[in-house]
Length: 232
Image 1 (cartoon, rainbow, N blue to C red):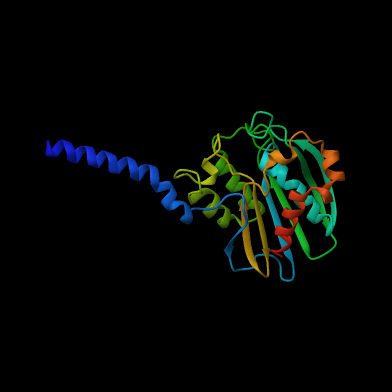
Image 2 (cartoon, rainbow, N blue to C red):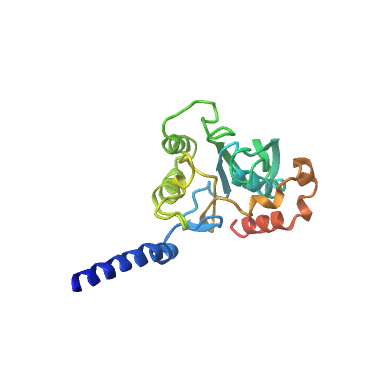
């Protein structure tokens, strides 16, 4: 009987530990959907601020973030862009988006970007099917932004993400891939955001042209702009 009780107690303890461990580890895991500091170093060119967007053509998080970035960057240079929508089969389907094509700065704020995958997350941005979208993404980021790639690998690929149940952000999606990530580097250090600045549902059903003409009156977008301004 004593052994039976011990087995029951051990099973209960294991269940409680399994259930509570994610909450215990939560403060030590990588936060999502918020900017946090990853380095005291300024990785941008001396005297400049560098903002980097890593996303994919159908990402609803990247779609939501694109409007904040456009609203902010429009004060610092000329933006060439297209309208688009996120993957209709993903979460927050058909979220309206800006797809950046070029940015011509007229100040000390630089903006660089890369789209890793196509709209449906079944091929690269160049429509090539690969066996490992995480490895492909890291390789592409390394070639485009070599000084920032180690940070992406550490915080997006290697470290567990909050709410990921022992998975990093890159392995929370299906298929695993590099999710939308924004890096900002300035004299204040280097910050990263993995995910969205505001919930994409806020712009569900809106036409891209409507959002563009109402940027200044959409409080959640302007709140995102303020978050970026505080980091530069």
